[in-house]
Length: 63
Image (tube, rainbow, N blue to C red; front, side):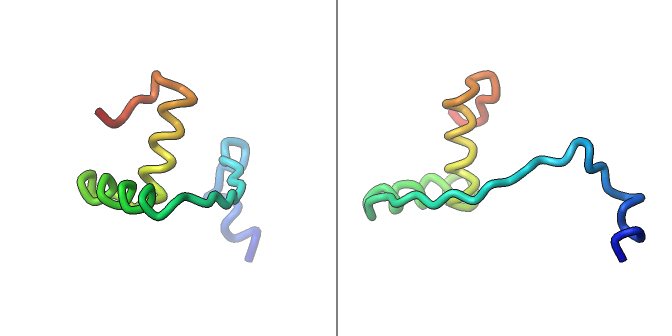
């Protein structure tokens, strides 16, 4: 099965993902959810976008 898909995958440019757990106060989760609804994305997506913008301002997505 592995060989069947390997011709379609570009493993040289694959992104390595690492899972991280973060605890937020409930008021912060509520605010994240409100912003996520406004942008029509998930809570996880908004957190990723904002952290990315903070780490590299040239990738600014939100206003």
